[in-house]
Image (cartoon, rainbow over all chains, first blue to last red; front, side):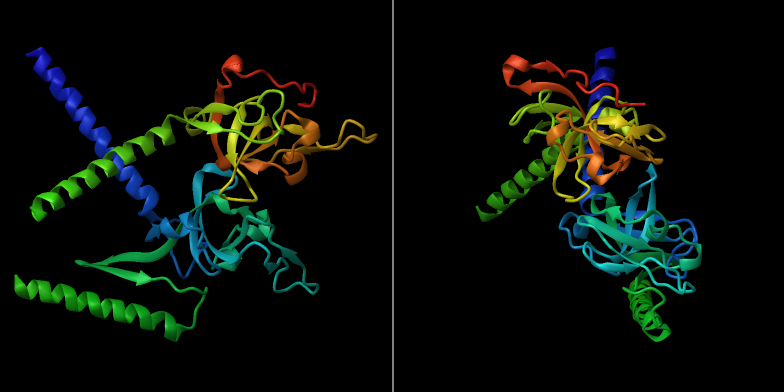
Length: 190
Length: 164
């Protein structure tokens, strides 16, 4: 009886480890859902928004200017930051504020990226701590998921911060339209 | 017959993915074998040595001064570097050479480490590119596996007196 119990426990642990490893690899190589907090990416991503960050672009080194990325914080290895890539290696970035008389520039070194939050007044980013190594980037944020009543609406995030109102709202309009059509047709079939 | 072949292929792919994921997690959370190249860690680690780097210390944030670590290169995300940790966050490290008259010092910022190779004359490390974020560290080298005559735990730093 004890032996049967031991065998069952070992096989349960074995299955847990097996499926845990598969899930971990899915999060590592495909993508993961991330809950963002803080005001530094407003109005694109607000506090408590859930986004989906994919890992494929980062593994293939295809992160481009304008992408929103999740990266490990250079000052705390256990925390992540969510910012927009405003400069790749070799780019010239402006380090002075809009109110400064004398403009200062710097070049992003090899293997680094320059990150800035969309909410420039309330964001600690590369303007204060400099460019961060590319290897700290974990994934690229591609979708924002919002739940309204019983629908999950997904928004494709724009490539530029504070994009023109017309273009920013047109895309989610089509996504919402598609979702409404899709879910309503499912309800009718039921 | 074709259906049997398809089922066998799918189950083979399924097993490969399954065991590949388990192996990947073992390398990610336990440790991995690394082949080192370059002269920057001589005489502790020479060219073409194979070492075992464990991941547990790094995940539990227990990397200490004097540990040899494998880290991602800050200048090339696809390359790794192997250096010794000579300063943790908050430490005061000496940035001037031994032949300089005026000694200069700097403090390692929060969340960063100061890396130096054992072969100080022939090593590109934090003395040239500054401290690197702790999050770039992949693992701590704990054993040398190859060549067999130098198998075992690695030696202490040959450069003492630089940590203040």
